[in-house]
Amino acid sequence: MEFDPALGAGVAELVELISQGRLAPARTRADELLARYPQQAELWRLLGICALQQGDVNAAEDALSRALDGASAPHSASNFFNQKLVSELAANSVCGIFR
Image 1 (cartoon, rainbow, N blue to C red):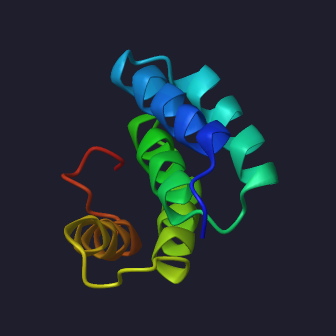
Image 2: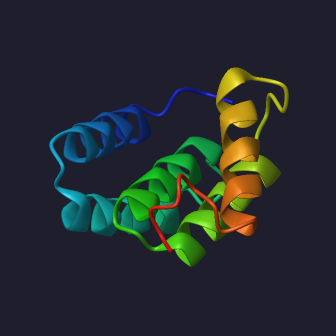
């Protein structure tokens, strides 16, 4: 798979938006990128993190599950993190913040 500069720039922009706490624009940008790159696990992971920070547990669980499904390195640290988050979300016990 060739490197796509537009995808790289989009991921960088998305990370920046999330790190600035600009979660609504981040989710919009993630949706735009996923419309173009639906198989990119990193985009699904970032969308899941954004949704989780917004308290949208169902969307976070869905996005992180999709990230796991599309992961090219299923044993990577980020996928371990995703698996743990999905497990916690399924148990509705993410640090008790969504109860």
